[in-house]
Length: 150
Image (cartoon, rainbow, N blue to C red; front, side, top):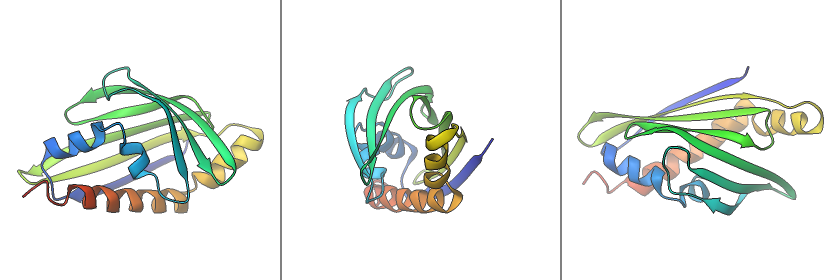
């Protein structure tokens, strides 16, 4: 089963990182162009909350439903219950390093479907594409939280 890990630090306290990720608009802000996110139903982050959205990769719509699990002050996991992959679990872990710095660890476990969707997810979720996506997420998170530690 493919896995992907990515870690980075932000100059912000844990509480600011929690607020940023709890914002229902975070997914839109964290998705790199040219992908467009269309939000259909985004419940506030809580145990069992549901997010329904479409990722538009050019003309290709990726319909996605995720349920949040393991929600705590130190992070959460979003689990795809419907979408393009056979399995997708993305765990976000927040670790305070000191009063004004937090490390964010991203861990994804996924499986591809067979057929056309398997080809699509193998391309979209290839290691180079995931690295680019998470480099963008790191940039946006740091930019959004740059004054939170002050």
